[in-house]
Image (cartoon, rainbow, N blue to C red; front, side, top):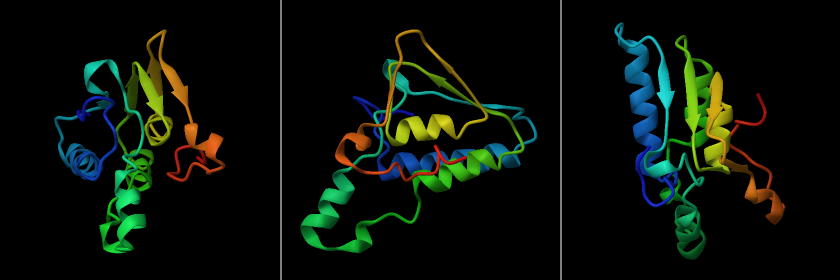
Length: 130
């Protein structure tokens, strides 16, 4: 994933992940998938600016058709092994994305967390419920 500075799961990133996972499933030359984040950070989580815009404008059409939960479900259903190579941050939706993978490996100083819990919000992308 590449969305500096923390590889936030913005709508284009989520859509791109779904497309790439679907492509990898179709390709016979792909035997396994390794999910990483660029720049020493896995992912700081969902890009909440989308929800801020929905709240400010009331325009629910801004809510995407693709979600982190859909990508997590795609990973879980994958016939090919998916490994999360986690470095730096894996927070919120980023951690759920990693947890949805078949296996995870983390660098020694990796920070894992669900900061939404401090706000009383239940993680909702499906990564912790499987």
